Length: 191
Ligand SMILES: C[S@@+](CC[C@H](N)C(=O)[O-])C[C@H]1O[C@@H](n2cnc3c(N)ncnc32)[C@H](O)[C@@H]1O
Image (cartoon, rainbow, N blue to C red; front, side, top):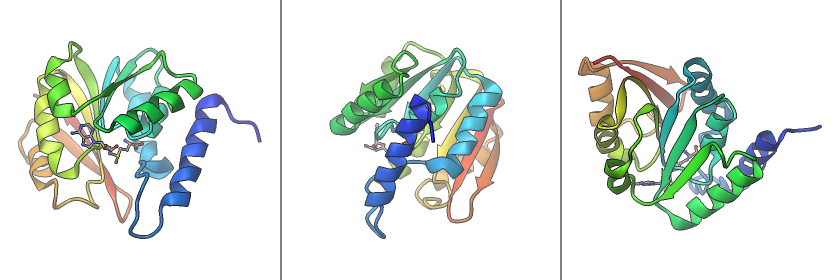
């Protein structure tokens, strides 16, 4: 079977993740195809100009988004140096380096210095930090930006402040995409 370059790299990362994901030992926690389809659809439907991703890991979700982007660009922040190097390599192999910039560092330190206005945010880093990441990102977000957050069922307790905020503050119109054991929250900024 023939795959294009992004698909080939996505498949390789999936295989590596499956090989390492022994019960209780999640080494490569990529979003995966099923939950990733939410991310892909948000990109397809909105065609954002500038995406901010918080938590790159090895570039899987960046590649998933970038392959659906016609013109936009992604800025992705990864705290771990080794992960960010692996991500750069994977993105290069996927032929998507022109669409994705990887920044190595702590998102909370990097975000205030970014020049862009982002119309899409994808949050997938430390689970207790989602509210802090969003608050930092809000300073750089367009009025109608869309925020996607992974693991909102698996780590619901850790991100209760974030979920209460996007669901109840009136600042967002928020929807849970429920996949049973886990979920993805898509929140549209409305004010
Ligand atoms: C769940 S993984 C990201 C998975 C990736 N989005 C995907 O689906 O392919 C979380 C990543 O966030 C990174 N991370 C944790 N805290 C961070 C922070 N404060 N700033 C940037 N990255 C962070 C971790 O090093 C880890 O690689």
